[in-house]
Amino acid sequence: MKTGIVTYWKSGCNYGEQLQCYALQEYLRGLGHDPFLIRYDYEADVIYGSRPLPVRLIRACNPKRLAGHFITKRNNKVFVRDCMEHPRGFENFRERHLAMSRVYGSLEELRNDPPEADLYIAGSDQIWNTFGGGLVEMRNRIAAFFLDFGKEGVKKISYAASWGKDSLPADQAEYIRPLLAKFDVVSVREETGIGVCRELGREDAVLAPDPVLLHGAQKYRSLYEEAGIKRREGRYLFFYYLNNGLNFDRQKVFEWARQRDLEVVYVTDDWHEGFERSFPGIPEWLELIDNAEFVVTNSYHCGIFSILFGKRFGIIRRTGAHAGMNSRMETLFALCGIKPRFIDAEDFEALERPADTPALEKLKAANRPEDVIEAAFSR
Image (tube, rainbow, N blue to C red):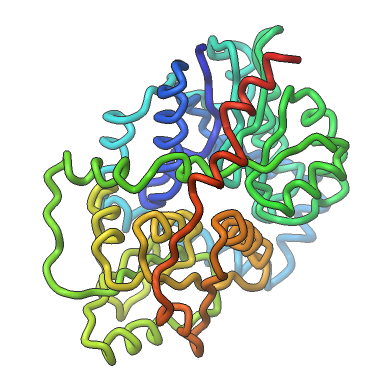
């Protein structure tokens, strides 16, 4: 079955994003399907400057908002320059391991020339999280991620899609409700997502494991073994940190490691001074997790790989506007049957606990992704 997948794929530094793409395609191939990534350019399809002129003028005159605009603009330039100076080979990984469509620059392109498929899948990852963007700006992007394109007869499902929050603004809910109603099957990644779907009229929404959990550790070890990646020498703590405004003192991680004579291998999408960074490719990143003494991260997918590789690890809690993202970790711990491993700058107790032995086979048996796909064609 020809299967087109809409998800996040463009990052040059988010390892989990790339590996969830890889994991779902590999799983579908194992079921005998023909999956491919629909390369929708979601970053280019945000409608900036679309608010009414009086509203834009009022917003522009707000000193705090104006300062924030220029800070964000500056930071984006620094971020792009940093990624160019430290390439991690993500495009090479995609070309080697993913089947992909041409790039669609807009929702309009998707509607005018939709990719040929028997089934469209939305997900996984936080594709239903607008990250604070309003409906005016995000309308096209929302429609694309809710599969509002394609020829008549193409089945549509979500697989482990994430809202990244437990409620929606009223205008977004009104816009999304009819789009979600057209799905043949709805599956989400977090328990809180079930509640959001029910509020939008989908009482039949089910829970599904993240695609990365559909494979055992050896599947991912083979990526770095086949690439000839050699094991890093010495004892180290692997610290993978995605910068999203967390109020977390990273220096505490380095101090904790130093007290135990551990080197810190620090990987991030941030560019703050004072911390020595590493820039591994995807196979190297997997090897670094697999052979670490400890792992500290605020990344959902790094947490999953820590579980798969049997690591002693700690998850930094999200705070403020991103606190809703903690639900995905809470659901993950519950699904895997392990005690939560959250940490903060003053409490690293979770790192001292032995590695967990999760009930992954039980997890997959209770949440069979093939059932989600087969259900779409039984309707």
